[in-house]
Image: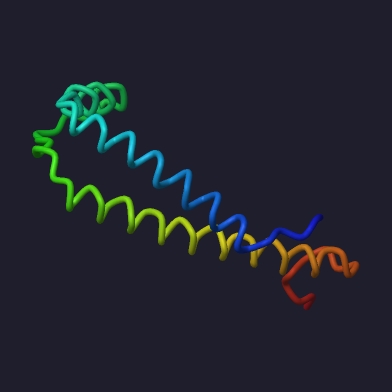
Length: 100
């Protein structure tokens, strides 16, 4: 199991999540998000009275910033866990739990 750089994985996850939300905000700005949301919920057998609000640049920027920050944190934590478990597993132990 190789070492994963927490900073690099954090950046990758941040970019992916922010890009995904940028696509959503693009749909909102284009005025097609309501139809897309209705279609996706219908595919999941969900009926809701959800209404997509008009595009707001400030709120969109905040959404992108928060998803990037949370994505970075999630990626960094995942890398640290991966590295921790890799160190335990490569030390010859087969489990992170103590044996009785």
